[in-house]
Structures are given as structure tokens and as C-alpha cells.
Image 1 (cartoon, one colour):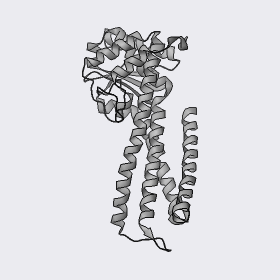
Image 2 (image 1 turned 180 degrees about the vertical axis):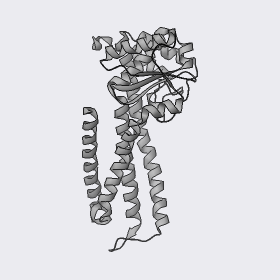
Image 3 (image 1 turned 30 degrees about the horizontal axis):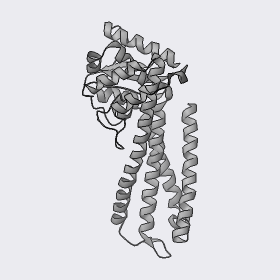
Length: 299
């Protein structure tokens, strides 16, 4: 909860700063503040953008576990189902103790090789693996994958990534509509000189463009957290070798495609090269980072 509170406070502060910057730019370009230009709609737009962007994203996070189970047809297990399931639950329990978090729910879902973690809180998360990754990986490799997902949980990456996405959504909503309004007004009366249809068309185009730019920021942040989760797995297991072996194994498999809401927390996204459009670095880049990892920093 402390992480959520701090991020909400930070995001509000960032919104206020950007509002001030937007006002100064508007004064410089148009000779009047954005607040004066928009009138009463300024405060309404700011509140709407914040609520829709940040609060909407957080509500999605609160629903992330049931939605993940539904979208992937994941079935929660407790270890009584069989030997493989018992090993899986016991391994997650061990890694959770090492990471100093409560043991998350453990689930298995049908599909190609992949795994993911989700949940609104680090002590109430869900870790799921596919049936295919269980069949095709050795226990050491699978343990490294679970260590990677537990690192996401311990680092609070699900919350952080959601709030980053939320505040960027708020920026996109606010600035696309504010800029569209400014472009569609003229004269002392600040009346729209074009039809409302034209105004909404401009706003939609701007929202699309700004949304793409915001996505690049989210993707870059996600790739950074993947490197951190790989390093976290090496720390939990005491060596980068199992994670390197798991990534090499993934390179010989066809990673399963996860729903968009889960892609950033999956073990891989299936792309062979690091790209600004990818949520994950390439497997080769991740292996290289692990090979250059200074394990003495964890001791």
C-alpha cells in the first residue's frame, strides 16, 4: 500500500507540474493561459483525465487476478493434484520465502511455453505457468523461470507498470483534448470555429499519436524490469546459470502469446530482436546481461 500511495502522490505532483508547463507554453504561444483559454472545462478535463487514466488503470490492476485466470483458463493448484503440481507449489513457496513475500497463488494454464505473474499487491499475487513450459523445461530451468516471476512480484513491478501506464494515459487524454480545443478555437470568444465533429476528429488523431508515444515509454520501462527480474532470479537461485539455461531453452521453443494485459509480466514475448515496440529485450540480450552480471553485488 505504501508503494501505491507514493506513486499516486508522485503522479498527482507530475500532473500539476505538467499543467503549469502547459499553461506557460500556452501563454508564450497564444498570449493567455491554458486555464483561461479552456475556462471551466480546464478543471473538468484535468479531473477526468486523472480519474480515467490513473484510477481506471488501478481498478484494472485490482481485477488482474480473476481476469488473468479467465482469459488464460488458468486453474489454481494447491499441490494435491499430482507430483508435478506439488513440486511447483513447493518451489514457489521456497522462492517466496527467499524473496520475503507471502506465497502467491499458483496456477497452471493450457498453452504454449510461457509464464506470468500478476496481482495488485506483492503479498497477494498470482504466478502461473503453461502446461507446455512444464513439459519442455527441466526442473532447474523451470525454477529459474519461477524465480523470474517471483522477482516481478517482490519488486512490485505489476503495480509500478500499471501506475506508469495510468499516468501516461492521463497525459494523453488531457493533452489530446486540450490541444484539439485550442486548435478549434479562435477569436476573443473562444468559440469553436469548426463543428464538434472536427474537434473530436482532431482529438482522436492526437490521442492516437500521443498514445503511441506513451506506449514506447511503457515498453522501455517494461524491458528494463525484465532485466531486473532476470537478475532477481539469479539472486534467488544463487547463480545466473539456471536463468541462462531457461532463456536458451525458450529460444528453441515457440513462446505462447499472452493477452495484452499480461504480456509485460510474461517470461518472453516471442520476438527475436530487441525492439522499441517490444515489452521484452531479446533472449540474446538478456543472456548477455546475465553473463555479465556481477553476482558479488548480491552477496
